[in-house]
Length: 317
Image (cartoon, rainbow, N blue to C red; front, side, top):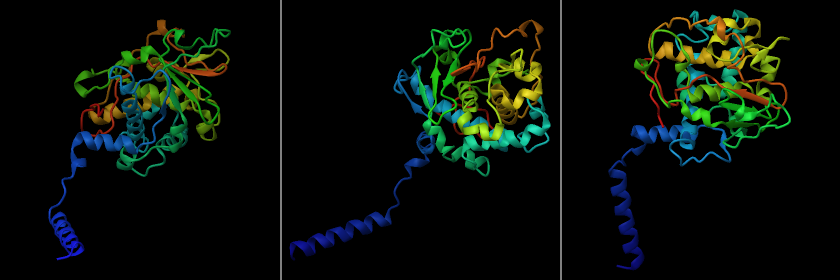
């Protein structure tokens, strides 16, 4: 038998054997499935000062991007979301804001058609134009632009009016837990419901270059001539005049957060405390006077990717 005849025979046998035995579907394992999901998604870029190999800091950033998408998905598609008769929306917005809020959230997700598509989809491709970095860039000549040194600041965004903004992640962002489940939460809404993913979503809504055609204005944290704060759960829920809610970053973040946990935990939470003593803007720090929008949501915790409406939220790092 010639060499080529022998070669062809061996090759045919190998191909027949391969076709007869199905290959193992390694992608079916939960860890790999979660990794594949993250690989498909268009996430912001990680810049200077965020080491993706550091388990205490940078490695937690990509799951936080997934959590932001999960929050958006629940806000729009969950049983207590935008298309339901749930009262949650009215905690943060006026009724006539619903159409625009939905458009904002869908745009950040890449306009999926349903919950499954939202959780498994790529997200808005424009998100890949954002850089999240760990290097603080304060403006020393502007007291209102003190960067991470400003009290309460967790993140802030520069260049929100252009197509390649930068979000600075301050050290205080990393004090928040990466995951929660329903047993971690009480009966009343508190800052403990928020996560790093909640902070990320807050920052996304500041990106006027992407969203201003929907909102009609700049999404900020202080409103009106007296700069009333809309930052933080108490302010977004109780204190902010709802006429400003469509342009208030935390109204979006807290609406999504309450909707997701109420859906997953199958529970209606009591309203947060309304402490008049905190009506001052000590905790607020997402000003938008010049070049920065600062995010300091009081406490985040929900960095996950794959959550079902009837399961407790856990982190899919």
